[in-house]
Image 1 (cartoon, helix red, strand yellow):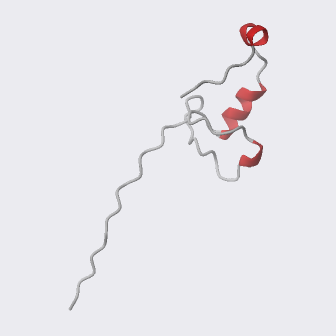
Image 2 (cartoon, helix red, strand yellow; image 1 turned 90 degrees about the vertical axis):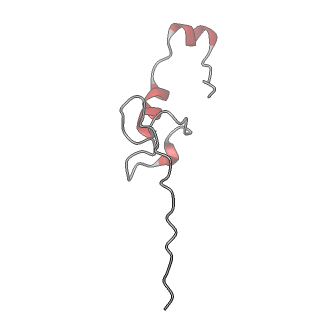
Length: 70
């Protein structure tokens, strides 16, 4: 009688939480990702939307917004 061998897959790397709200970066279920800004690997869709809608600081208004590189 042959025994089946189950391959044990390694656990996926843990995803760090959102830096702002500590929620999952992938966002809550049901959140419409179509309208959220592009993933930055640091914030959830809701926080990315909030951060995008904030008024610019004086420095950003004078020198423009710079995107942070990873």
